[in-house]
Amino acid sequence: MRGFQFLLGILSFLSPTLAWADYPRPWQMYYQNPVTPVMEHLYDFHITLLIIEGIIVSIVAALLIFVVVRFRASRNAAPSKTAHNTLLEVIWTTIPVLILVFIAFPSFKILYMMDVTPKAQLTIKAIGNQWYWTYEYPDHDIRFDSNIVPEDQLKPGQLRLFEVDNRVVVPTNTNIRVITTSSDVVHSWAVPAFGVKRDSVPGRLNETWFHVKKEGVYYGQCSELCGVKHGFMPIVVEAVSPAQFEQWLASKKTAPQTHSGG
Image: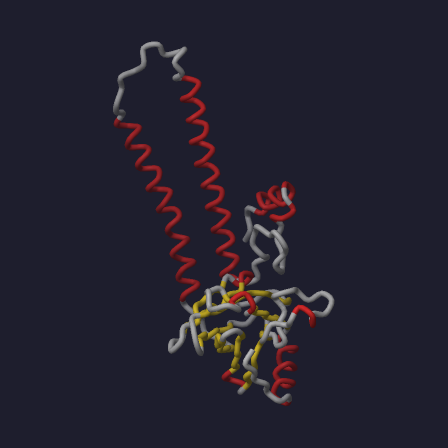
């Protein structure tokens, strides 16, 4: 995995805003650190495409420079009348086709990986509301609302517009299925570090999955324009060890369940 990290290192050296981050940063231009198999594959595929594009741009730029220098008017008082070259036309048709075929196979593999949920060990239901999320753990009879923390109530270290009062807590190294829907308009449950984005549609259940490898706190947002407070529907997922997750489940089952209207 990450066979092309040297390229990212060069980009990070040239501009600090391109560096990896475990959480969103001001003026960030690059991906967060991938922590799921899906996002790792997406990242590797992105780097592969970036290198292919760089090679194509370099070759085309070199050819343009060569043509400008080699065939300028001062060196070609009597320009050639050649209009076709069968060999060149076959080459510049065949090579792009081969490149597209090379790109197609890994892209289909990733699409299949994203779409087909493996056997889940934990199921979470995410319900979009205007403008907060409701989460259910059907297997454990747990339900709670997750609202944004107002700016004047943020504690030191908490992120503005990203922190919530109730985080989604999941165990690491576990296949987690997320079933999402909406109670009003179309929302979208998305966490960039997981490579997950799934629309929450009223009257419909959509499904996605993730498998977090590393403990930590990961941030996302509603990614579908859903009304005036669309920008105030953050998603926070806290990945903990399986033992800590069992402790969290026990604490949730003994605590009173709260439901609010945002």
